[in-house]
Image (cartoon, rainbow, N blue to C red; front, side, top):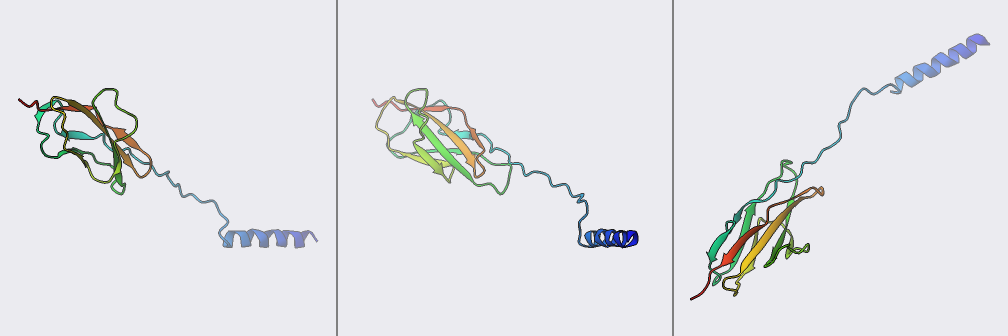
Length: 137
């Protein structure tokens, strides 16, 4: 009877090892996501004066993401006073530019900021930039 139990035990152990029930030494590292770079190189340049508002004012900037497969979207905040609103004037833009349109506010200073977001929820906000519309004679 003891031999029968021993044989049964050995048979079960053998079956378990054949079926792959063994320690898995594979280490799986967690996937990390890097935040995009903060937007830089604004156009119009920061502190620009004399911006012509007789044609459309196009805001543009540069931003990248170190994770090459990430998709970037941008929120643009614009105002004439600080602090800027927490609600973007334009949200989820897929390009690094925004057509502000034709402004008819000679001498007005506009403040603007861009927030870059990747498709994993990481984000980075650029500095608050400003430009001033030219004063008409």
